[in-house]
Length: 491
Image (cartoon, rainbow, N blue to C red; front, top):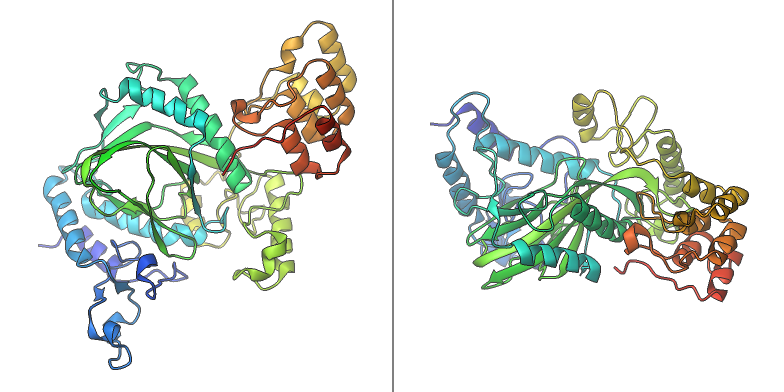
């Protein structure tokens, strides 16, 4: 018997939403396209590589049923998906109308996979990047794991949640908020967020605000995670492999902005940066081994770009604009960037947002996500709350030399080392403002010339000056003359 919601799911898998979807790529098995490993935007492909029209295309025409279907090089994935969803249905039978069932979760997952990738402003060219975790970040997480790895608790999943096969392979969570765990709590989260944001801001070139950090999730033998996009406002994210005991690598499947799949192996100590709101990601192949432990760190853009040139949210650099498929006209990019910046300064978001929109800066106007988001946020988007900077930070950024000298004369030397919410000391702020007289005074009073932002994980004053004003600016020459080093997060 097929229930109404099951029928709706089947109907969804047979139909497409109007509008553009992520392109399929059936020409390269190593970078297969959408709907190959699992249903992502449509039915999982049954267009097997061994079929005659794929093996001998010069002899056999492609049957109509396979015309728009990517080649399936991974075997009978339809059977694997069917087994997964049926197992979920058997495990979770709603006891009342308020409980979601597996088909409802699947319906929602596929709708999000269709709607969000085409509706988001891309922050980077490809949407993901693998790097080594910064040593200080790795040390923080490794220490927490070492002291608490045997104290994880079964992770709570909503009834019918089909994203992970938690009913067959339960996940455990070593929570950073669990007060019973050594080293847990707000201070640990702040340090992790600070270190991760320095790297992600360097990669995306936009200012970020923390929005989610649960702890270390531990997957076990047989675990899978269906390909999905994260719910907003989880936009710029990082996942770090903390530890593993596996028989073979357990790749993370990610789909770039062109819709091609990449199976990325993340080994302990490695870090995957990705735009989790628009880049479909998951673990569609069962884990072979005892465990795989990883931590997810999420941020939301504030609407402000990094750097004084304010080139906008778009990933294409000015010299590369002619190469973009979005438009052949460099002027179109500049106009869109200019309009974007004008609107975000007024507190309105979207690629071509307006006073009527009230969208976050990472959602495009007139996209499928616009109506959906506004339906749940009728009050519109508000910039994530920020901690007010100290008087000294404001004075340094606005060039108030006399006020700063007066504070230091009164013995308030702590202002030299105090940090704002982004880990900036007043020397960093003076450099951002471009006030060389303030910079010289602060250095003469003992400000640490190589102090780094983001709690010691980000950029040095010289690195900021080079980015803001160029390598030959007077402020850069002064800092170099004082022995300053150009230091920043390494990608």
